[in-house]
Image (cartoon, rainbow, N blue to C red; front, top):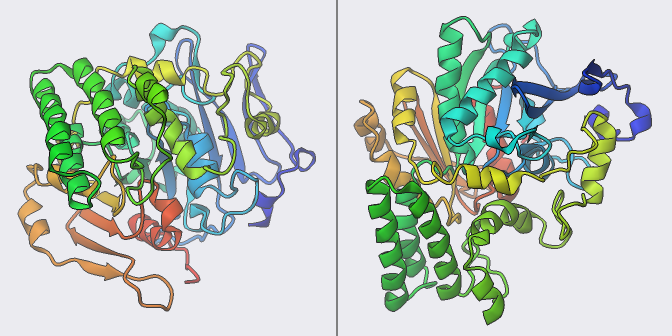
Length: 463
């Protein structure tokens, strides 16, 4: 891992490829990191960052995997959050992460959709308005990365998603398969893993009230008030009023915050300080949607320090992002990290509350390995909601899957149960105990064992 600990720019040899006066790609001298922009459509540019594992094992019968990490939001940065705050080689202090997934796979991070993080559009009308449009852009990005690199083509690609990223993941997997079958994309899709994923918004909003009542964060009166809004959302979804449902979702989250004593949506065992009445009133505006979806990711992970890429002044970047920019050397000077995040969320308002259960069914029917994993303490994508949408699958193996017994999971020598799993054919489910929404952060040991099993990595873990 030593190569990843040397972050000093003086130790890096950048190899930019120039196009129109703007550098679109770079890499480190040792070849273990590569990054660049993929022009996925005219005036639409997606930023990606690939890490090669120094632990790569050459095994002809068990090829070394690549993980494509898809962040949620919509509008949350995979380069900032997934990479530096969850599973990449370095943390936000640029110190080594002992639980990096590079131990078992190569890692590809992307700022998706265009407009997120360092990705950008030259015209806001080019922002995607659906998960399917986002998948089309990601497919083009994969073509530009994999089709030119025979070495990468030898590794199966596993799409691993978190939160809203799960909707991107299933639509991308279907889009990629179509491109592979047409001979337009040269890669082997190993599988899809959906971590605390927003696959069925209806099932999640309906789960919040019962769950919070069961853990004493709501009483009967609170529950009835909360459930009435959840039922309204259900009806709006059924009537195809998706933009209205997104607005009601924001209303419901704000109501729960007030009624529950400010429960943390990303770990219901945690709570923020209760806001005063004036700030609570202000949070009823549409801005709440962006605040919850974009900023609470980083707030949860960095409660004791400033947020990478977040600032009270949208025209300023954090020191963290400035250091990244200096390393990469290819980010256009007029592009500020995350400056279009809010617009990304707004553009997807009509798709945000749409379910993607059908896409999961299609992947299962095609024989693609689908793994679902959920943190026990997550609220926003609660396990109760995840189990509800899984029961709606039309996949022919569902009944056999449900009849299976769960297997306990352990980590280390203490023999404490850290989770459970069950599988049938190409459907796998992991229940991760003690974890909230950000499973790799809360339970790194069991998570890396899980991801090693999902990717069938030839790496040998030490514990």
